[in-house]
Amino acid sequence: MAPLTEVRIGDRVDGGEVRAAHLIEISGVAASRRYPGLLWVHNDSGDTNRLYLLDRDGKYYGELWLDGCSARDWEDLAAGPGPQPDEHYLYVGDVGDNLAQFPERQICRVAEPALTLGKQVFSKHASADVLRVRFTDRPRDAEALMVDPRTKDIYIVTKREAQVLLYRLPYPQPFGGRLDVAPEGELPVSGVVAGDVSPDGGEILLKTMSEIYYWRVAAGATWMETLQRPPQRVPYVRELQGEAVAWAADGSGYFTLSEKVMGLRPHVYFYPRLSPLPTP
Image (cartoon, rainbow, N blue to C red; front, side, top):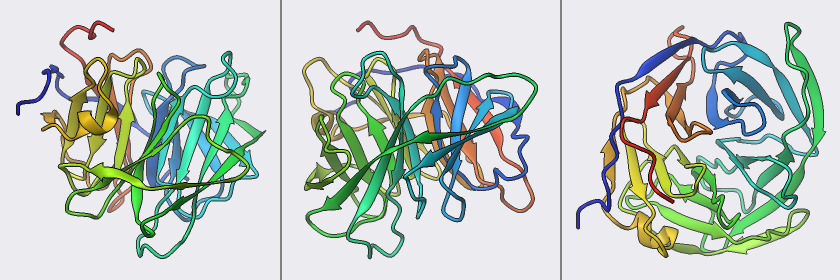
């Protein structure tokens, strides 16, 4: 089967170097819904429980500490809806497990706070809700976390299998407790290090170290049905350690960022959409 639809994406645009010395291992990115044009990011394992706010040119605005959320191996970040309809939420996936040895992982959810953005760098604390997750088949390494804006379901995609696995955490998730989940099935890709769903819920990206794959969600189709179709490869210039991808909040394209490697600082890259936005 051919991909369901084609999307046209333009050449990479270099927004600029990330101007924050402590952002050296960026592993997750999500486009802010409360602050248009800004991006939340986080480091990989080794950092503490905080998110950082950047603009698309790499300017650094400050840090948000997630109280109540530990940081063992944060791997991905998603923006999406949550329990309060008038709030915008961020979801942090503490789902990495290189040796597949930990029986539980966690997802932290926090509402985007009110911030005063100006010349002074902010440092703010916010209380996070924590969901403990156990895979019922066995522990697995995962680096992709997504939230469906239509259903509020959370999805995790594993990394290391020849055909990676999709796990669905249906809404409402029992934040403050534990959820046991079984895999929904295998996907026709491997080595997934990040993922994101478009703000309208109709387009999915999964990223490996060398490729970005695109799927359009057909009306009435489940994610499992969608992601088992052959994907379309969309433009991506390989970064040395690129582990982050996110749709822009207006759906106009997608961002990628990398870790700092061999002294080369990460840049904010943007791939603009050339074809019209899909009809809902």
